[in-house]
Length: 426
Ligand code: HEM
Image (cartoon, rainbow, N blue to C red; front, side, top):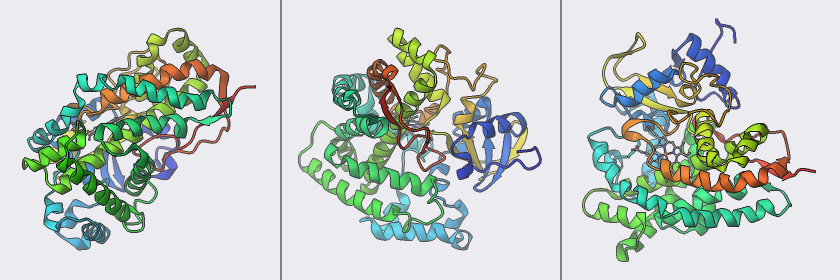
């Protein structure tokens, strides 16, 4: 990586295992860097990332769907610019049980800007009030206790499959009121979507990457759940959403999108936070020792893992008008890629940012975003991670990694381990 041949592409698989040296170079030498694929301005310093996330009047979140779905926004006007995007949209429209016009009009929480966003967010906020989240603690601890049986059994375990996946998936399923027994499907749907839009299958198109089939299955399944709740409401999020829909607030397509966002956002990210926490504790026995001796450090541990190995590494925005970042002109409609994973290591904010240290003050990290789109599930994720890690720190000193190989989730945007096998240390 000499200065002349330095190249960074947000979705480049070569960057996946260790993006941090690239981030350090970007921050030091190219803080506003032009990526050619996707065409975007890559922002890597903390203050610049914060500026982009804060200013929703200048930077639109609609890029969260266009870039992630691989759509060149100009293709809507001129299909010849991006035939794959058009093919994707047609295939999706064919598979979904909604009229094309309804799909085209459909709003989506993550990709909307104020004032539209102000109308959508309160619909789900109801399920995530501090009182509601705290009420989940007993159930989370019960789930953790049952997952810990496998960890303690002495037969070895995979922290991802045995603990980090089931806890968030079961919690979010129960919150929504969908059958936790279908959790293998939820996981499969969520993996297909993440790989298809942010991973190696990104350029394959929605039919080949399985997204069309996954969306068909999801919409069919969820349509049935929504019908049941409409007939017989319960105290769950799907009933709340169905109710909001029937009051004229949400179209059936918007309802499906809401639930999909909650299922995907609520699972994968928390899984990855827990997985990386375990990896980091085993790699830093001094830090494990600190937390074990003083469990009141667990919340600080959670924040430091979020900072150090941010489960969402980047967000996308579109300039709504001509603007400037750090002296670089950004033209209207140009895309900005805000690297949360880099901002969270920025040496201008954190001394020795590349060191993992549970004693540091990490709360200002941007792992949950910032401003109007600040993660809706942040307190739930923190609570789940805290309950899991409080139980695990007791066991980890007796355990070691079964293999030194690391397999990452197939995505550069979502950062996490696919497996992390442990066994009892001899
Ligand atoms: C460690 C776990 C998590 C991380 C790192 C994380 C990260 C993020 C980030 C960075 C955003 C901002 C997106 C943007 O600005 O474009 C976000 C938004 C969101 N997150 Fe999370 N998330 C986590 C867990 C959860 C959970 C458990 C849920 C729900 C069950 C959830 C639901 C959402 C939703 C609905 C949004 C969209 C909010 C909006 O646009 O107003 N997340 N999350």
